Structures are given as structure tokens and as C-alpha cells.
Length: 485
Image (cartoon, rainbow, N blue to C red; front, side, top):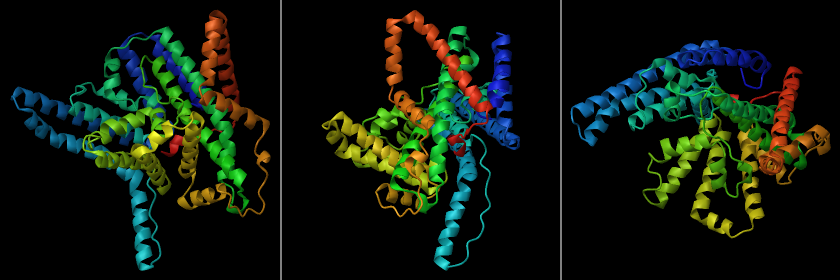
């Protein structure tokens, strides 16, 4: 089940909200949230529910073990070095358990397939079939949530959670289970036990949800149809204009797909009384790749910074080590998105640009006009998205060749064959919302006519909700990119 579906919008969400608001007692609301999250997860993949339960039980036990070792160390008067050694075993086993599950389900097939290819290349023997391993829904996100919880307990930034239901709710909470944002346990630990629900916060949550839904359904889905058609074209039918249209369309699609879904998750969190971190901040207005990653999927960037980059040494051991750490983090970031060489090379590309900017390109960019800085960043991001979207490196290489003007198309349709009036209007709206112009316009109108704008704003949100409902009810194209990850 996804947020932008008929089953969620018309059945699951209304029933959940009625039951959640019906009784003000926090234990009741936690129970409703937990049961609803179990139903949400089981809706499409009930066969993976036992795996999720094993994850939760194991991490609950590991957390208690770490907490017990810490308490015992303090009671015995151990010095800091002894405390760290005492926690090393449970911590290593806990992290190893979570990484082992992630490596098996997400990367075992990829590793075995590449090994078979390598052996076949060496020996000339026929390739052996490597069986597929079904990827459990949301495993990347709930594994990262579990790891962040254990690391924060180990670092004593939070106490080990003694309530099994509270930890269970944190890991499986349906608003952020499938696509984030990645919410740290320390961020919501107190809210799991003590939080205040109010109609004012719920109203803001509804507003965020409607805006996110509109971004996903009315913008991302519309351009997705064109992007998917163009990326599916045979090589002989791909012309240079069509290749660029495909790249730009996917650039718009992935932003509004993921940012819209994150905004819906934040809105749902507010409806439940939780405060989730912001995940996107107009990344396409960035003027460097470094700035882009401060604005794109911010919860993931912070996770890799705090749990990978800093433990590797961060920038504390000289420039060479800093650049290596930065590059390695983005290779891992690319691999996190999927077990495919396209994702690895996408991560490498971003890592290379970040290293180059650290080595001096940032200083050069700072002296250039704003328009040039922005054009450079957007061009690099668009080219990298071609890697991200391609099925394999061969398709990506072909796209780059055609985009560079080397095209052997024999029967390509003209660009306008894919640019309907709806598509063009959607792309114009995408520019307005992706650049922050919409927010600036709304802020100025609010300053001039605050009372009227309150009514207009609510009417606008209602209109968006109705349009989204009609679109989904009609069976319009409704893919969700991050289900792949």
C-alpha cells in the first residue's frame, strides 16, 4: 500500500484517523498506530511480516543488552576505555545482525551475479542462473532506523528502550516505513511516551499531506508517463531532443515523487502528534553539488554523515583522508539505493564532484555569476539522474552518447509528440514549485491579505485533494520510484 492509492486515501487513512482521534489516551493511540502500521505493512507483503518481527525482537534484545552492559560498567566503576570494550561485543553483534540481513536480501543476488559473470569471463563457460531473492518492503529504511537506534544507545545519546511496543512502533511506524524520512530514535523517543495531540498540529499535517499528495499525483505521475515511455524506447528511436526530454522529465519526476511522499509522511506524523525532520529544501536551486546534498534527502545525508563519515574520521585526519571518507560515503550512498552498477556509478559520480569541489572548484564557482553556478549544478545532477534511471550501464552510455549529439535514430517521433498541453503546464508548475517561487508568492499574498488568503488556502488544498482523488479513482498512471529501493 502506498499513500497515493485509493485503498489508502479512501479506506485505510479515514478509518485510522477516526480510531486514533476517538480516544485521547496515549496508550490507546499508540496501540492504534501499531496495529495500523502492521496492517499497512502486511497489506501487500504479509509473507515478510515474520522477518520484520524478527528484526524488531532482535534489536529490542540488543538494545537491552547494551543498556545492561552500560549500567553494569557504571556500577563497577569502570573507566571509559573499559566501558567501550565491554560494549564492543553486543554492539558489533547488533550492527552485524542488521547489516547481514540488508546484505543478504538486497545485495546477495547482485554479488553472486557479478561473481558468475567474472568466472564466465575467465573460463569461457556458460553463465549459471542465480536465483532472485525477493526484497522485503522497506528493508533499507527499517534497517537504518534500527542501526541508528543501536548506535545512539551505544553512544549514550539515548537510553535503551524498555517498552517493546514503543520500539516496535518506532521501527514499523507506517508514515515513514516505506520511504522515510529517516527518523532517528532520539528524535521521537520522548514522543513515543509523551506527546500532545492538537487540532492545530493536525490541521498543519493535513495541509502538508495534501501538498505532498498533489506533488506526487498531479506533477510526478504526469511527467512519469513521458519519462518512462522515452526510457523504454528502442535505441534506434532515441534522438538527441528526446534523450534530453527524457532526462529532464525524470529529473522532475524523481524530485516530486520522493519529496511529495516525504511531505505526506511529515504530514501524517503531525496528524499523529510526531515531529519528523524535513527531507527536502528546494535542491534544484543549489549552486554546487555540495549544496545540492545539503538540500536533497537531508535525513539520509545526515545519517551517512553521523553514522559513517564521522566514525571513519570525518575531516579530522588531513585532506587526503577527508576526501577518501567523503568519496566512500557517496559510493555507499549509491549502493544503498540499489544493487545495480548504475547506482554505484551514480554514487561515484557525485563523490567525484564533491571531491573536486573540495579541492578548489568551490572557490572557482564562488567567483562565477549565480546563473552559471546554477547551470553547472543542474547539468551535473540531470546527467547523474540518467545513470540512476537507466536499467544498466549500456543504456546509460547510449543515452549520454545521444545527448551529446551522436544519434543514429531511424524512426524517432518529434519531441512535441510527447509534449501534450497537460505535460507542458505540469512542467511549468514544476518549475514554480521546485524553485520556491510558489512559497514566495504565497508569503507576499499572506502579508497583503491574511484573512482572505486563509480561506483561499483552504479552498486551494481542498481543490488539490479533489483533483488527486479523481486522478487516482480514474486509474491514472501512478508509479512509485522508491519501491525499487
